[in-house]
Length: 82
Image (cartoon, rainbow, N blue to C red; front, top):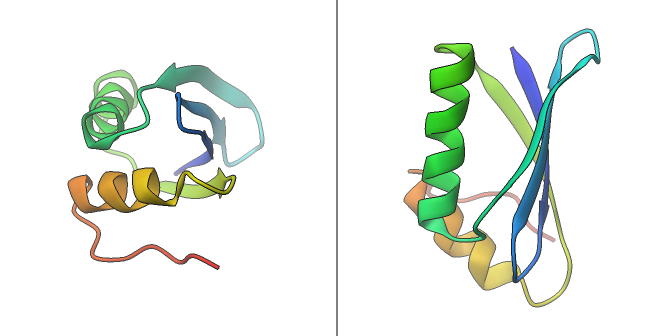
């Protein structure tokens, strides 16, 4: 399993992937939209194989619409939001 920290802004999605041990595996950016999230998921699958990924998203005000569009593109019906 990998853990992903996702920092979503209007301009980009920054991510950091960690192994269960806490070792950093990969750091990068993607566009903050559905296509960017799909590309991120494909990159993870290509580089790390079929692995479960648990993610936490930090999103400042104004990025909620990006979160909604991205989660819909990822096949999620809903993501927890405050």
